[in-house]
Length: 286
Image (cartoon, rainbow, N blue to C red; front, side, top):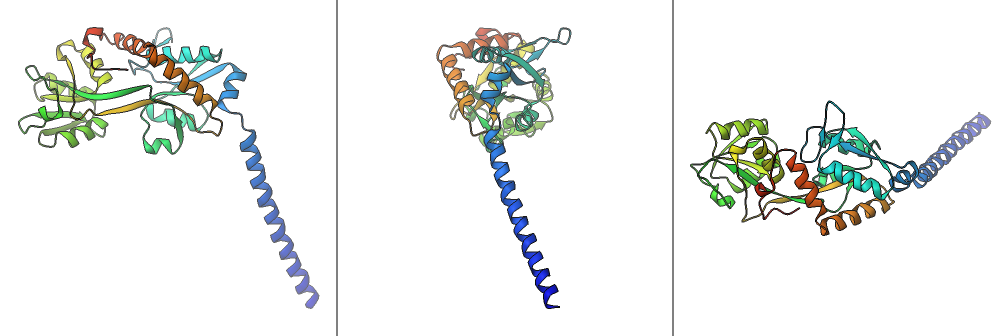
């Protein structure tokens, strides 16, 4: 009995030691894999391919010609210029704003454009410096020309927004005295304004300008101040220890903003939605 007990105890100790050793080896292997994983910078330089999330029907940023399959829009122009920096060609991965975050996490794309850097997103992906600062404003009925949020914060006014959006957040915070009405889609909000059932439709600047481009009778678009409500729109990247890719994109952003080229690309994208340059508020900067 004594020998069997000693043998059994030794076996358990040996198994425990072996399990511990396997665990340590697993950690080492994982660390080595992380250390040797190819960075975005190195992969793009090696493959000469820059993969971007492309969003059909999202002008002024993206547009896909269904007949030819060709892509255009402000972000396509930007991506093509970034690709030149790496001497690479573009590869388009069709996506949505929400899915583009998942595409970055799963290494399907290298860049995702026009993303607001929310804290929740920042838990899983990295962001560049702002591409643009996107301010909020509204479309209003004829005879109403609001300049500030207080101009809309009146009990007699009906303010509409798409439910669950940042437009709703802004309306509820800055126009609590108004009659606030939410709709499922922006198009429903536009119809409410056109039919006289609403006095103002809260929208971010580029969306509002695009709505005017499609429905000129709804213009002009009004930027609202006191306070200015604006959110950064950035490029999303994979979160990784190697920061060289992000540093290149940040340098590219700084240069093209400084030369005014970012604004030109945005204006060209808006023009695809029939937005003329004189319809863009002079106070709206890109």
